[in-house]
Image (cartoon, rainbow, N blue to C red; front, side, top):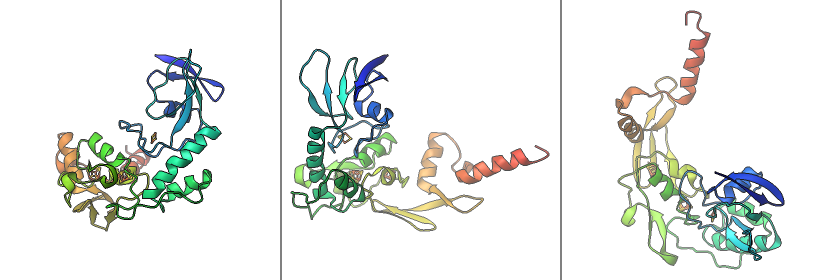
Length: 254
Ligand code: SF4
Ligand code: SF4
Ligand code: FES
């Protein structure tokens, strides 16, 4: 079901239940949202996606995170104001405690005129630059591996292998958590033949045509098992697959 709402004085149509953040972004607004990914459930932890919303029939304007606020008919949304910027800047200062050097936060600090964060940096975090957004945990869980967990609470909270283990026994080395991490703080090291991540080292599967690594052997085996295929049924990289199609199309005897 579609609903009409107002975003920054412009009427837009959205699907009921969509988040205000996604609707505002589709309408072209540039909203910082570090802990959000459309493909996984939100936990609204970074608190940067603040917006002002007013429900029909109410005369007060609520300042709220927008990634977990569903649109509804007649909602009036403001994506930028002095009040939003003030609170967003303070939330950014809190994130800067944990990740003072993360480029994504430095860039936002420049945009929000945060020159001198007021809060002392956390210096004993197990994973430097981690803002505890749990995107890595949620992505890994959505993929069905459940290799990571949030551990501890409050100042002692961290993310990593469950129960504080040094290695993640259920990790297959797919690298999706590394790609999803907003502050690029997950250590992952690829050599020509191996990938090291979360205390594990995996063999990389090479494309049989060009030799480029495709993914880890453990990840390929898991995907093949899910698709009920032999493990070695497909070990061409995407580039070579496309090239093979082009070559076939160009072949006179196709
Ligand atoms: S690399 Fe490991 S921990 Fe990261 S998403 Fe893949 S399976 Fe999960
Ligand atoms: S490692 Fe990255 S994705 Fe995971 S909680 Fe920390 S900042 Fe978020
Ligand atoms: S994106 Fe909404 S709280 Fe992080």
